[in-house]
Amino acid sequence: MLVIDSEGQGLDLSQRAVEKLFNFEWYFHLQFSSVAIASKALSKSAVAMKRKELSRRERWLGARFEKEILAGVTPAIYLKWIDSTIGYGVFALRAIPSGTYVGEYTGIIRKRRRYKDRTNDYTFEYTIGDWMRNPYIIDAKAGGNHTRFINHDRVAPNLDTMSVFAGGVMHIIFMAKREIKIDEQLSYDYGDIFWKKRAKEVRGLY
Image (tube, rainbow, N blue to C red; front, side, top):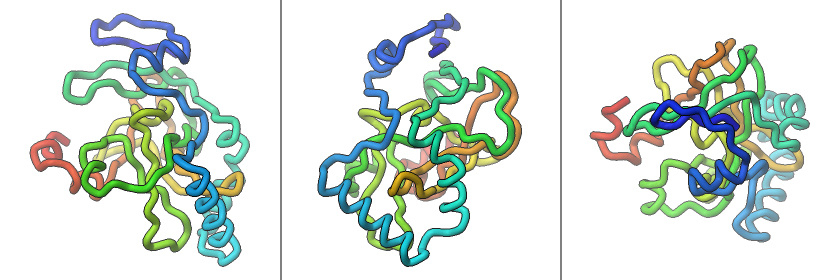
């Protein structure tokens, strides 16, 4: 993977080198913190599917991108240093057509920790149908993939995030909202819930 550091130097790094540089483990697929949580996610997903709690979009996009999700596809992207406030971002190595699958938000599915998770910028809500008291999140702090580097843009994000059903469980995926040009930064709107958990001064930067 191409990584452009803070000095503007381009580095062609192996997966292991990327893991070492950013101090995380690369996950091509979702991981579960325990067998019990994996079983719960599978059973709840099956129930949601049976009860038709999943939208047509969740089912259709899951079927459409199931091959890419299960294969852990990484698009043609590179990582580039932006500044000391934002850190690194994800950029398109080649043009990405509108509607293209851009990746899955991978990490460890675990129970949320209400207070500790407020300072963790790498968590994503893990939704399953109409399960209102779902206690699980995806935590990509210690392990994930390129999607953990995608930055926030409230004004004009070029990616959509969505929950889809594939391989028996729910997944959070990214899809291009429009054509993304070569060397354009990938972005999505983190949403109000994310920022409400952060300090006002941090929220004001965006």
